Image (tube, rainbow, N blue to C red; front, side, top):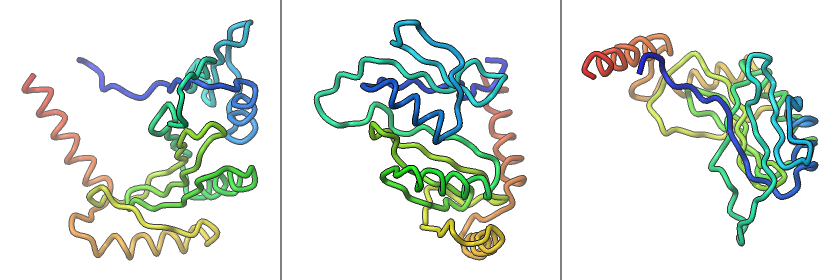
Length: 180
């Protein structure tokens, strides 16, 4: 394999396509990029370089209420953008809203209208061994959250600047590729 795999898109089976299109466009800011005339499939994107990042497919037929995906995660770039996403999903009445810091990322988790878990996140400048998760208050100023996160993470074994971790993991990837 010459290039590293990357997440391209996520497909979700849904029951109520119009409701889901409304949620993903009005709350999460996607646009409809394509779709079948009969409405059985709709493609959504937030990036002009990607034809679609999310695909909504009519036909969810589970007997129980188990969501059809474990999680769909979107990197929004900055902590202020995570805070903006938090306010937007809260104002939209989303359920299961959980602001969490993983040490290496600030996140807000919530459910879409059919119970699929969504994560809107951004990276922090640090690495700490995972899994790690603690509640954060996304109402606080971003500078306060940055200072609190750094103070918490500095006390954890394995703490390092993210660039050091990326350099170390790049060496592991390179060694694995060389061995294959």
